Length: 166
Image (tube, rainbow, N blue to C red; front, side):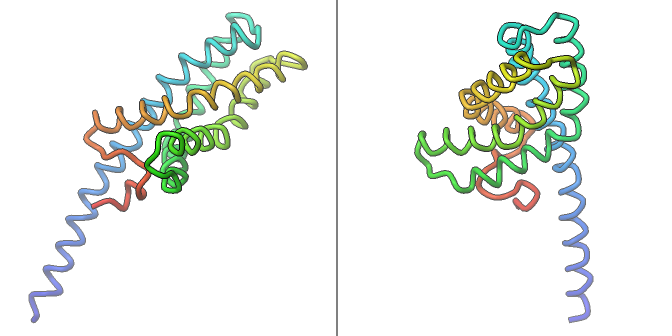
């Protein structure tokens, strides 16, 4: 009986040690996915929908990349939490992925383009364009995020928080 508490402590220590690298991998995977996907889509929206100059677009993308570092993993967790409500149907997954993306990212995006110089009509058009873009790209981004997570040896999100798996 005396050996049981020692085994239990070692088991918990081993679990904690294996969770830390997974957490780092999850952070890097979610950040990589967010930066790649939204740098490309952000440039298109800022330049061709919002009408920002190339200098403003560059400023917005640099600011956006800096802001993506601290928000990528929280967004991944937010998405995973909302995706637990999705049914296994395509329509349901599209709806929940889009809702997750719009509810988390549009307010952040609005602040980015406002600080970067968008004003008045350009600001409104940029926010509306981003909302439309995120509604349409919610599921493609969710699938891209899951693909990046698989490349990093992580399970896709949405069923339960990745930090609690295994």
